[in-house]
Amino acid sequence: MRAFNAFRNFSTRATATVLTIVSAGLLTSCMLFAKPPTNLDYSRTRTSEAGYYRATIRPQGDSIPQGKLQRWTLHLETAGGAPVDSATMTVDGGMPQHGHGLPTKPQVTRVLGNGDHLVEGMKFNMGGWWVVKFRVNAAEGRDSVVFNLKL
Ligand SMILES: [Cu+2]
Image 1 (cartoon, rainbow, N blue to C red):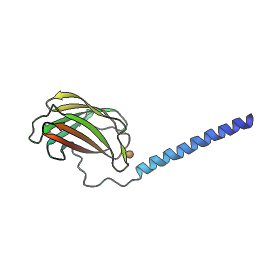
Image 2 (spheres, protein in one colour):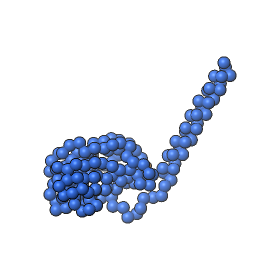
Image 3 (cartoon, protein in one colour):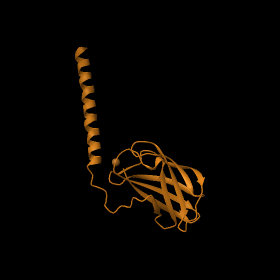
Image 4 (cartoon, rainbow, N blue to C red):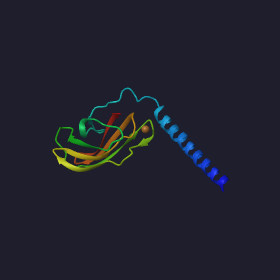
């Protein structure tokens, strides 16, 4: 019985060690990737890919912390500058160099008026280059706005 317990203790410790090594390896591989492209546009106001809309992100507190759930305001307007309130939007994103998406599923939850929309559930769980994409479906047409973030 004692021998069995000793074995079990050993194997538990061995498993813990293996897990530590594996997670350290994942963490390291995530950090060892190349630097982001130098020509990235990190502006908080961007024109959509097809040019139908212009959008501005306003993170709560004006900064984007790591590992913290956050609310954003997304301002949406037409290319001509008219605020857009009736739009269907979905949020997507991730780290292109790490091959993973967002750790949460952020959503546009409320129209605040004058083109402003509340985005809840934003979270970034590590430093580096992130991309956040809003898919917009409104009167002008379907389009996407992409923001680059440096954390
Ligand atoms: Cu990553």
